[in-house]
Length: 69
Figure 1 (cartoon, rainbow, N blue to C red):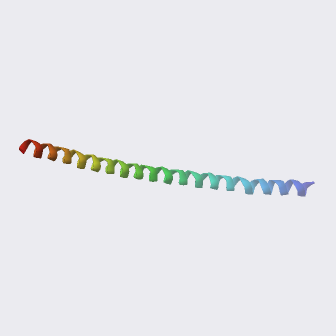
Figure 2: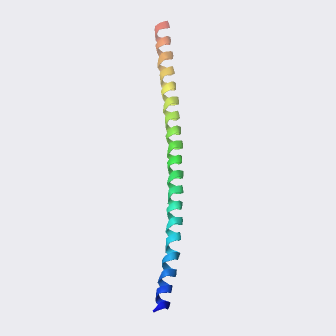
Figure 3: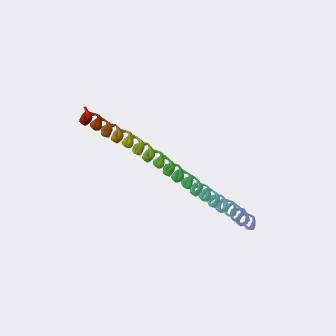
């Protein structure tokens, strides 16, 4: 009987640290995913601003040319 109790306690102690390690690994991965999303969002907003600026400059120049002629 004593041997069976020792085996179960040994098994339970090995399982607990593995769960903590996996939980820490998942948290780190989630942080990296969030940081990548932030970077992608910043790139998208920069592209939108550049396209908007080009379109706005084009419209202003077309209006200027139209009123000059």
